[in-house]
Length: 416
Image 1 (spheres, helix red, strand yellow):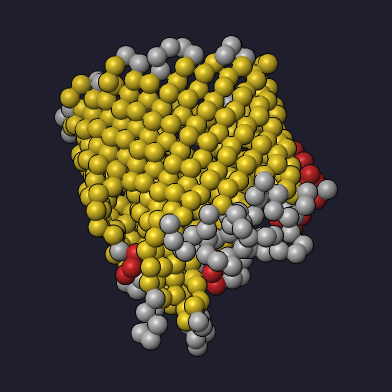
Image 2 (cartoon, helix red, strand yellow; image 1 turned 90 degrees about the horizontal axis):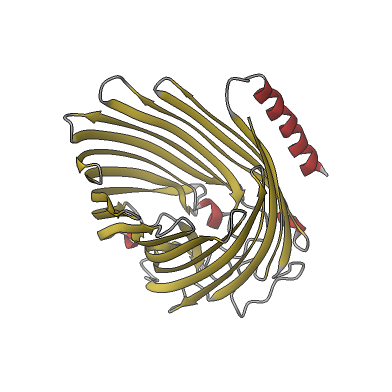
């Protein structure tokens, strides 16, 4: 198979590169999984699969893993790479190859200056259904995401530090379709903040964040080409990280955010955002975590109503609540469970003075998952996962659907 030859060649290259740097600790591994999904295409509950496609499918994936983590002096450099090959039994048109790559540097000086640099890249198969009626994607769409970030912290006095950070993100889609190309965007952000650590158990932060971005293919023009839409967001964030007890930690962020668009003003947002994460480990075997968050979204796509171009947006604001639990049944067997509910405010705008259509709705997605892990040896792990997803809607801007997924995997990982 072409995908297997691709992975084998990459594995030989990685092994050769690693063996030439014997002083650098590295990891290399191989993972394989087999699974089944009841609604692979993310079709609505009453929507039949088009001819030639199957609603449910079985998926086989092979992943090649490689990693590097090396400290030298006050610095630390790291890199991780995974190459994926995925095959579908019934919908083979979606067979694809993707990857995830990460590299970074953590550094510090003899004084009170420290910082980090990081770069991330990912290519993965994007959602089969982009949400609106008729949005079923009949061809492969690979979404590429690129992230660059840098941060610097300067210790002013014992308890205070001045913080700076900057970042860039770019998202692109491979499918040549106006509705999909409207998802492309790029953004830059910068922040300045102050951290106060009155004790080893608590730290306060305040950050001012400025984000600017652009959807270069926001809307197709009748004369050809695209009209771009720019956005700008300003946020003021107050954070608190503290140990609330010997076995628990609290990470709290509350902020005010203002988001404005040049063209699609229906997506503008001004209000409170934030998150609260509480982690608790009452014993050596049990771990619990609760997360509550409210944030703004960046996904939109083009639509056409009665021949009129416009946009629909599926994550103007979303609120989420999640619970996670992990339990070590023994030294080699671990159990996991999670539950999450996400409520989104959805917006649709049609830019036409003769047909001023606009709407705002909400949908609610609830998901649960359970899993088991078996680690017979340090280098070997196997497990199975089951998840259930259910979306309920209040209007016509998104569709109700459900999906069940079951998968088992095995992973061999060698370290040196």
